[in-house]
Length: 617
Image 1 (tube, rainbow, N blue to C red):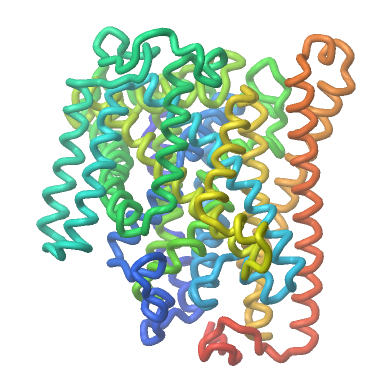
Image 2 (cartoon, helix red, strand yellow):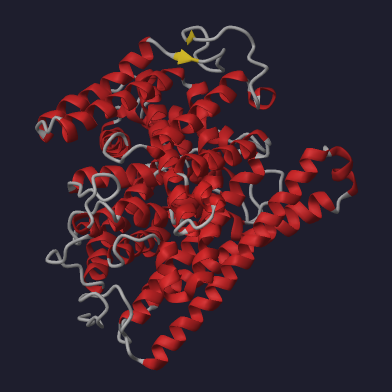
């Protein structure tokens, strides 16, 4: 049988070549220059614009973009279509499209005073184009918050030790923020102390696992905080009281964290959690190497052999018809390319970038790190081979990532139980950071849509407490609808279509910067991702929702009123997103044509603040 080592070797080789070669080329192409002051220094305010040390910002950025999607997505895709198609899309698509997307979104924002992608697209396409993009992105944010809140709840329900550890590390992050920014104590000793405490939280979690209500995992060992069945909690009938309660807690946490100044929790927490992420991803990849060549993995060398089929057919290996094109790509989602990353890059990261040249490591390198997380997830699912037909993405991801990851870590001598809880904690840490970062970005978008408030309604809408609460409520309603299997691909398709629009924004910037700039590096991914995502959203809207449910008499007879309403709503959301995206793409293409025909190259954002850039490449 094929060893998991081939997954690791393929990804490491192609990612190394991409970072050294293509990443360096792109850095020169956009003319990164440390002599120019970044927005973090120009507009430093102690709230949003705060220069951050490169390792701190890398930790924040990586933690914010690396949510649960690159774990659940690749695992689901491997179970449905086989591990080879999933591996190829991650290994090739990530350095050529996903990393390019993240790097260009960050660079574009830095050259436009740290403004969001929505604001930047308005600079070139006008107010209508800006508002259409912001509404599109806001819908994506609601989907992100909804699916990640449910994932957090499911993980801590299955692994209550991870709940305890997560609560501890959030508390440690707050104290670390005070250590750095209020007490001005030394950075390196503080890092050593607090990182050690975060790792110690894994042991505390194992000793004292916490659940709000009776959990599905570790039931005998857990400390249950509330008695009773918890049937009164919204969503308890669908997911169980413990999951439903953790959904509420996760959303409340995200709401509070998204409103606090970035130094209070966001920066220190993401920096500390980045060590968990590096240890988990790096440790798992190292364990594959060690376990393969030294045979130290629990169960012997056979434990690191791939148990899944390499290819399960175009329509997949489960009963439900799922065509590889386009559903494979939107199912894997963030492991290869994610539009949410452009919102992070231009929403928070660009406001904290200390030097322009840091963008290569943080933007391009950060996305490659997420690809390594996807490879880790593929490796985990491969060694446990959980292939029950019809299992959902959530049901497949949770047992495989924690159990398979724990098995792999035994190659480094880590006890199986410790490894499982550690990998579960990593999953939660990814999700929590993306939750509150997503809500913070959603708040920025609403504020940009409103602009300067001129009426009482606009004043209320621009209030950060009000618009954050609205986003939380909308996300909660999506979660308790119970339609996870439909929400996940809708999220994936919308998220990757957002990536196409972010790449379009970068392409428009380049065309307006200089008429000598080549547009293939960003333009080709725009075309590829537009075709893939619109095809996927049309499949979901017209086949799965309209044909298979609304026009199917037997399906209608079995569906409740809520099911039919949810089906229609998802179809409308998909079609509205397609219309918004195509409208923006049409306007963007017109702008690029006009810029090339005029040949002036006087658009904003190039070196010299509005003067044409020179293409040294």
